[in-house]
Image (tube, rainbow, N blue to C red; front, side):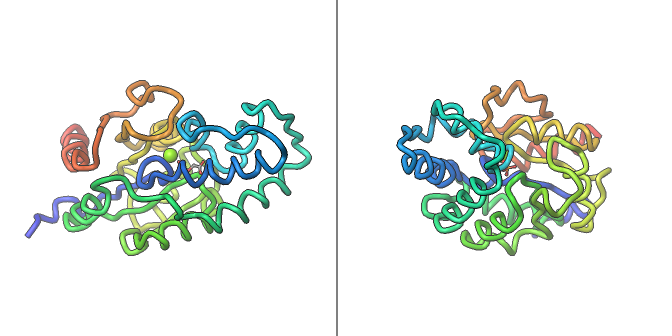
Length: 229
Ligand SMILES: O=C(O)COP(=O)(O)O
Ligand SMILES: [Mg+2]
């Protein structure tokens, strides 16, 4: 039996690029919207750095990188078109990264509360996590619409932890991008950065406290952050 040494601790996870490899489906939707307008599609590897600030940012910057004009007046219909297509393809290719499920099980067995703090809208986050059979792992799933401000605002992490029944003074954020490390810092929460996500800035330069290359390194990262406290 694992010792319940993480009782009272909450671990908040980013979703896209941290728990789940979602870029193929997100960029798939972007590419269908580009090609429908006669614009060139983007290779997933070249576009994945666009993921992390929500669907509207992905669309806006994806269209601009494809050389298309972006009219802010059309934000709402473009976002709706994106959401309709993406929802229909939400788990065509998306899968949890290797070791994620085992890692979540281990942390829960050690007594930690687990939650999700993502810039993906909550309904799509719920749908993705449910499609992958991962809902049972989380005390709560918090897109920007379930908190008062989105990452990089610290309120996103703080409120996700509190609404999950945890205490921000005993919490850790795990993410792949600048919104995650900045939100964690603003919330006074230490952060673990995964090196395999979607950041345009090198993962080692995001200002996280510990960098990991694989999920089976997360237990040790959590241990070292708690020991430093
Ligand atoms: O959907 C996005 O762009 C970002 O999602 P994330 O916060 O889970 O990385
Ligand atoms: Mg992310």
